[in-house]
Image 1 (cartoon, one colour):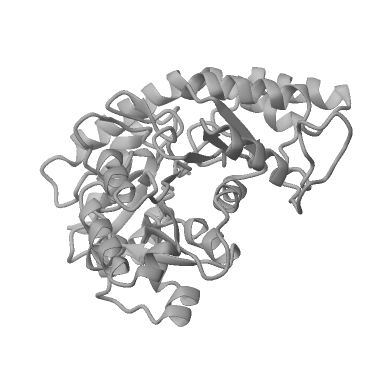
Image 2 (cartoon, rainbow, N blue to C red):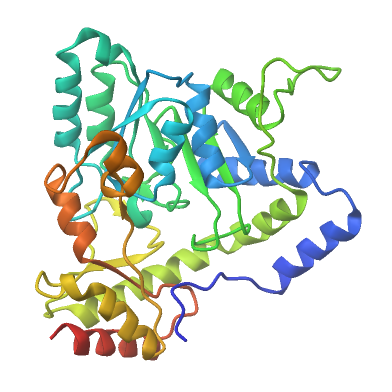
Length: 376
């Protein structure tokens, strides 16, 4: 089976985890601090707070901005459901925005229109606690335009950079443009700690609050244990951090391999009816996933295509989710097809092809040859 993804786990990763387990100190100690320092150096960020997973990172970021019942968070319609779920878990309401058809990221003009609608009611705009764009499949959203739109109303931006550790736009790292950036270290990401996540910020007060919230509400600066607010157990283990440190050392190599693999897919798909993903000017994506678009006439058969490719030993999947049309959000807020027309089309046509560091030219050729046999 040509898997959808395979983590780049090597002997140094296994040794680091084994040594940590043998040491007996397993939760949020020296290795977690070292991993945070390593990540802060990579991102050139003043603070990095590592947590148990990417969803926890998003949840804490919104709580640090005091998102609460009755508040609004403006986010993308096309993402993994965690992006919207954390808004609901704060008691707030997601306000969805359509995407661009080329990058699959939040459309800044749609964001401006959404914020303009909210300004028609002075109370509504006061309820907006954040704008929450994602960097779809490891390519950064148009952060200059998104920041300009949000800053016009004094709304902080939180980047859901779950897929984008190491991605840049105009040579600036993902997750460092807004008030906070959150990342995932799930096995489908370029580097992994199994589960794991992190928040990057340059704001000292936000960083303090994030550290309090991840560890039962305990003040990290108090000389004696003191609990200053209700908090969660969103801590990262020491063996996750040990794995993370060795994984980060491989990141440049992994990103280069994924870049080359994406380029090979582009070449193999050139001139076909399958549309390769676009890369914006000035963008250096991570290529966390290679998500192409099936021709419109093949889209209704996507589930069949995925099943037939699996029968040939190739694992593929949809891109990600049209969140407003999932059962919960559709029933709760009454969304219908046509409310987000670009997301409608991209969701219906998207297909994720295998992408990992050790993917060979021969495997990619077989994937594309097999795909083309299904879409003609």
